[in-house]
Image: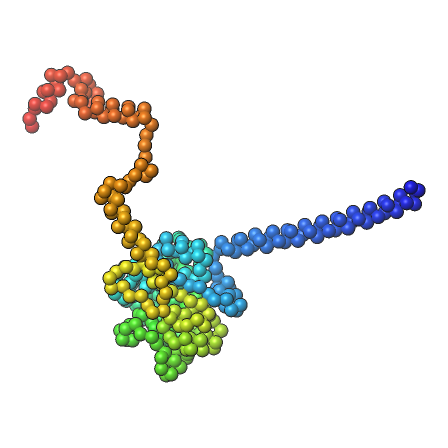
Amino acid sequence: INAETWDFLFALLRVMLRQLARWSQTRSVACSRNFSSQQQVAKDSKRRLTLKDLHEKYVSKQPITMMTAYNYPTALLVDKAKIDMLLIGDSLGMVELGFDDTLSVTMDMMIHHCKAVARGSSRSFLVADMPFGSYETNADKALDNAVRFLKEGQAQAVKLEGGVERADTIRKLVSAGIPVVGHIGLTPQRLHMLGGYRAQGRSATQAVRLLHDAKVLQEAGAFSLVLECVPAVVAETITKQLSVPTIGIGAGVQTSGQVLVLHDLCGLVVADNAVSPKFCPRYVEAGKHMLNALNKYREDVSTRKFPSVQHTYSMPADEEQEFLRAVEEEDRPHKSNVFGDTLTDEDYDGIHSSRV
């Protein structure tokens, strides 16, 4: 090989090495970006959702999921299921505390349950129900109580029931920086005015009123509206005419999202007078499974099948023998007083024969 050929080969090698270096650098940047993206996704999957996240789901027309929870263990379950919004509902008065309705629920009860839920949840967006009597009197009282939910209960938003009559209250809360979810249709806190738990908006007049309520609440600043027990066509129309998400419960499939009571969904309430709402399917009969477990436990304890060896602690054989010997010694008459003095048999007999 002559000198010219060597020069050509070296020049070609230098070009190839430069190309390899550029490719390697580009590949490194791409891998770094991909790794950073994966890290961000992992980070986002663990952080608590915000209004921005909910808005992005709404804009992209992805259904929003919402579920109730009232304590630490149920909050853990809802969080692990990656439910978007978690509602600490005043329905806890009925499914957790055994009241006939939600009217007896107080602020202190709600705050107590909110704290427990917040400890169990780290991802879902937390919304607290404002109980009956906590916001109707005036907007200032509503603000004071809503502040408690955010400060003490660690909620991110509050929900209150009612239509146009709640507009000023919602404006007051929103102006103070408190996100608000409105609630129209069947409003359980007004069951006596409504004549019970009845579907709403089934007449044209009622439906038009609900649409008007929805628009006014949106204008007042509510970032979302719960539509409960209204005809599907009414809920769909309201959803199309609003620019904020609607969350349906017994309102058809065309709302922006859905909410249910966990106890209804899982069949947790097994009281003889328990009624399952028409709009709520039973995904599992958890209450019956729990009852079966409790009955089996009672039987196993009664027949001494529980605890078995696998549920019992043991001790080393030599320690067991020493323990049993110590018990035998303990059963013998003590030969010393509380000061550690050795007592004779005569002293010991004298103590036991004395009378006070």
